[in-house]
Length: 281
Image 1 (tube, one colour):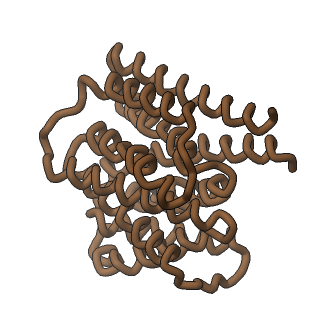
Image 2 (tube, rainbow, N blue to C red):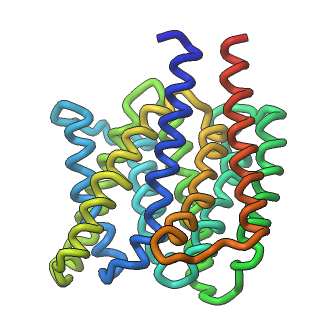
């Protein structure tokens, strides 16, 4: 496949990843399980997905990058689940998506990937759109949940940097190791939960699709797209998250939210187009 075709595929995979990730907020709110049980249950299923994807009995090389990325993966997952339980869904997803700031701060030092002018412009426009989108919903209630959401964003940024650093290797192994670690950590709590059909259905979706399939797509895409650019595309997630809330429980976004959402989608689309054109030029 030619470079432009590979990059288009990577961008498509990132958009699909954002769509899958965006469904977590609503489902984590609905399920009655505690955070560590959710982490363990979906990590078990995600591990199976990655094992199938890798097509061979994986041998971990236990490098510093792989172990750090795996620990960051677990931290990003559990802190976001806890934040979603303790604060509003809007607060949790918005504060987690401060992660582009950490990518900008550490991406050049860690990856030697200098942000381009299009990245800076997109970053400013996207944050302006996010402020509009969540302007009516952000609040200071659930302070501990807000802090956990910020820490989740930091952990997610570290995971993305570690995976991008392994672009010439197998970054998917990092996610598999993280899933195994998450499954083990939460296993004692998982045994204490009630296994109703709705709860099992939610966990099955979260493990197989929302985490398993999404990170398979992400692990493929991150080989072709710089960490910051990938993060900017993934800011579609906090816009789509309230959409599922609207479709399921009928919560209607306000005018500012609609304007902000269109700004973010426009900025992400424009950045993706600039990226593809830069390759084909």
